Amino acid sequence: MKEKKGLTAPLDCLGMGIIPLDLLYTVDHFPRPGGKVNAVDLCLQGGGPVPNALVGLSRLGMSTALIAVLGNDWVGRFGMEELQKEKVDCRFIITKKALSATAAGFIEQGSGRRTIAFHRKVGLKPVDIRTSRYPIPRVIHLDGRDLEASMKLARWGKRMGALISFDIGSIRNDVSPIFSLVDHLVVADAYALPFTGARSAKQAIIRLTSQCSGNIVVTQGTKGSIGLENGEFTCHPAFKIDVIDTTGAGDAFHVGYLFALLKGYDMNDRLRFGAAVAALKCTRAGGRVGMPTLRQLNRFLKSDPETYA
Image: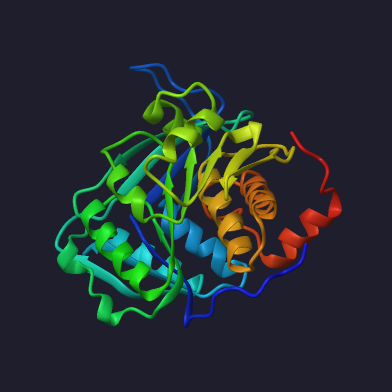
């Protein structure tokens, strides 16, 4: 694996996305409707696909900054403090008079499966995106929650020479209008298959090429991932690990993928790094705690790199 010369810019990754407070209960089984269950563990931490990815990149030594909105409450202050501790630049986070986003969920002990409920009242509008204030990034990473604001940022990024990365894990409001601006579309099969009507990840990618001319990757959990770059498909298996919690596994995959992209690595290595970071994250509860340092990631890749699920 030879590192290529990558893009040069003042900032490695500028992200824009939601910052919910995650309250996660680990249970030995999911409760039935109307039932109760005792939790065997509790995890309280900041979440959100993009903030999680920025924390992960920061731990790997990349410079990161976040554009987001928080409410003027203790949840917002908690979220900001957590990101600052992780060396994510928070100068571009704005505060509005509203409740901050929250998410609560159950994690099934043993399988690591989770069920999440999400609440959000406040979002970003195009007027909130003040591009003259932002450092020029090498990559812009988006979750598309505030689509018009995301598209404004993406258009600016394209003009500045940044690569646009996009993450979506499940079907929600139509975000496909932004696909034409995206250089690296990395989506979960839970989104790709129903959105395209395809029966396989490969078929879904082929159908997505009608809307996105960039690199396209579909992640498939324990089945690994498949990516398309320059007309060629690359597949990579998932690593075999003892799963504690799958919350944020997709976010973690983006961390490894973007880290390898910023290093100039090819598609196979991007998928490999994505799989490795996702595997390490799944050994801990919550979306951020398990994000590895560069030393931990390298140790994992060197220790048993051929052990796959």
